[in-house]
Length: 298
Image 1 (cartoon, helix red, strand yellow):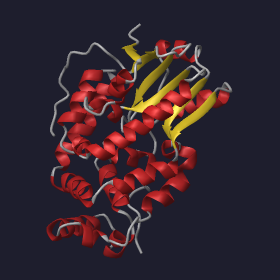
Image 2 (image 1 turned 120 degrees about the vertical axis):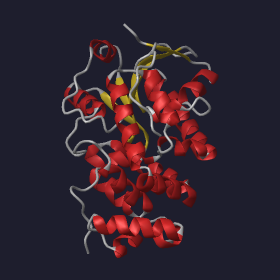
Image 3 (image 1 turned 180 degrees about the horizontal axis):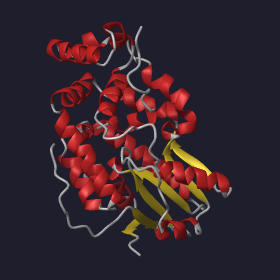
Image 4 (image 1 turned 30 degrees about the vertical axis):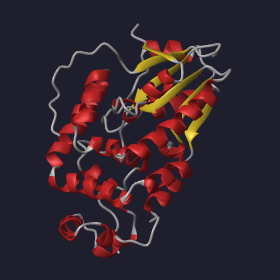
């Protein structure tokens, strides 16, 4: 049975599949990627650093603002253990497993399934494979094909910070476990997968443009550009239409963040998807909980 296309899909990329056209235009921006989190009885300030994937950077250097923050914190907190490359084998196994007995043929509309089957054949995947793995795995493969670079080689800010923490004996914590991450995935209905796969197959150029715009704005540290891209992209914004699931995840993050920063000044790495939608933004939840959040510009 054929199950490979190019290289296997790095599972950390599937985290952004909660996922049109938007040009990489200049958008006024008064905030960057690094934010200070204070107040509400917390003795020392903590910080939030926004991260994203598919930026195609082969070498990431920490800027002076991040270096200064690292000198003031006691632990680095990552959003999920599923994005840790050290957990790649376990994560691959979990993402490929189907949570129910339904196959792709049973979940997708007949017309969409025929499209997917044809695409799979073009990529060297047979129909048996399509129906024995989860649609998260399939969606991840389709998304990877649209990335402008080899997704197995670029560096990530998360990789750099994990290396820094290990080298300098800084404590590491993860807010959501691998198992919890995939249980959240299982909450999404079939409609989510239908919309995602339909976008990837029928609006691939729009999706590709959104991926590139997000990467460009991230490298510019353009907060406004990132949030506008995520909200305006038909593909990226699909996750926000499933409000109950989105709010469940954000409330879980809020609880874990509060537990993490008590008496332990931290640098918290969160995905840009967590802040883009004003209605469910983790920034909104933190402010409502009494925290002060302000960008670290200098």
